[in-house]
Length: 136
Image (tube, rainbow, N blue to C red; front, top):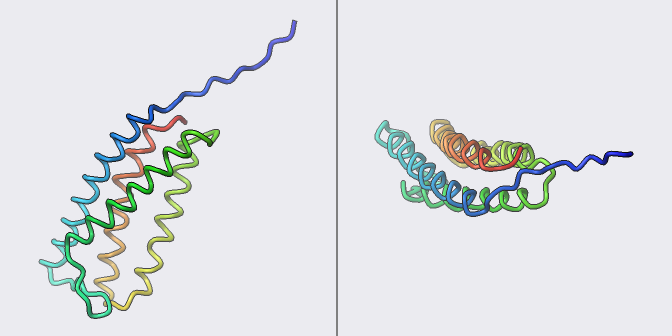
């Protein structure tokens, strides 16, 4: 008699994934606005190429890209053999790549550092929260 391996795969509830993703997005957006506001209060310019970035702009862009990350997670939950690992690897690479425009932006060193910090804060909130909802 031959036994065949039938690997079981933990499925991810899309509803739970979306709920977690939206909550993480709200938290990350709030956090990046707080970081930007704190930087502004500390005297760090929020100007890029002479144009000021409104504090709310940090929250909006964080929300847009965080929700894009949630969509990536939902896709990987359906197609990847190891969705959590694929999501973490993908989003860490995307986070690193997101720092490049800040590094070459027409802004002061402190402004560039603040922009990079907001990316890292958002990633530190969203990536682990969403990854926990994905099958290993």
